[in-house]
Length: 119
Image 1 (tube, rainbow, N blue to C red):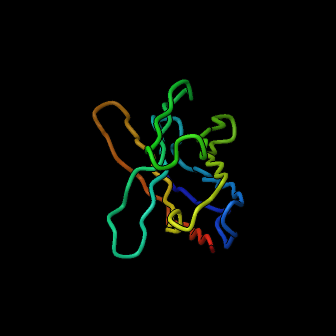
Image 2 (cartoon, rainbow, N blue to C red):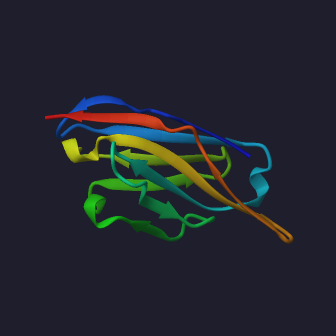
């Protein structure tokens, strides 16, 4: 499975960005997916996650009410709509996929996309 993020960039505080993560390869075995972020000098943290069918989502407290995770399984794409961005949202954002098939289970990561929020 290959995950490719896009949509990052530079935005002013209060602005919005929409991240996308396109999955390819053995996508039929992808289960839950998520967005993580890592700021300089900090550990990677979970931002939001979504179940395979999209029926359940989970968010970090710091982004609740501002970010929305969604997925389009027909197009094998994961999204993160980010509104009311704050300078503390500045980080590299990574797409994550939980993959399982019979007895095999793997976790895949994208290469990351930079989000910079200026004050």
